[in-house]
Length: 186
Image (tube, rainbow, N blue to C red; front, top):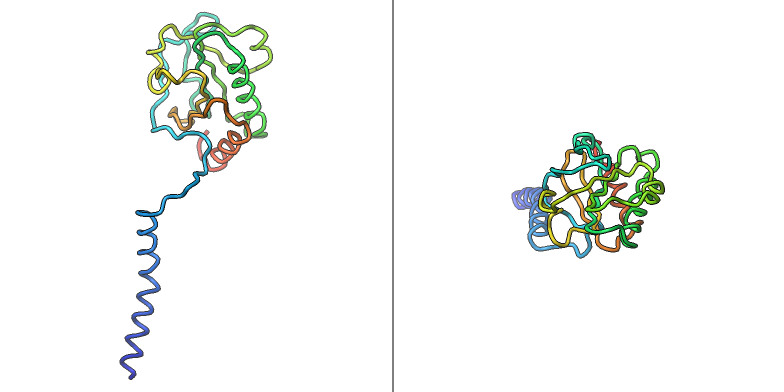
């Protein structure tokens, strides 16, 4: 009888240590959450390497000046229409809503045509560059459906998220705040 109790205790101890591993493995393989915590669409880690971009002044754009900061990127194919203005507004408001972390975020709009002066004044600090050929923008910005979407690039220069059209500013803010909170860089 004492041997059976000892075996029972040993079996109970083994179960206590093995059961969480077995349950975690089963959950990992067969359970998929219905809701993800991020709003934006995750993008495979692709480096943001824009080439052949020109500043409004006509000088070549130095993308190294953006290293070490989170970056909102908007690609606009034609003139800045209503959707473009709303995206610029969202980028500005989300950046401002981060409060003391707003210095960690930059905004960049890549356009085929220059933005009107009134928009540039309304969005102080917005960096504008122009492209001549969309294929020089690289993946994912050169894709046909890239124009009009807001992208988030991490401080190491990799794409992280792509937001839908039209984007929801409060959900974007939650994504950005979460990333800024847990990021050790930028």
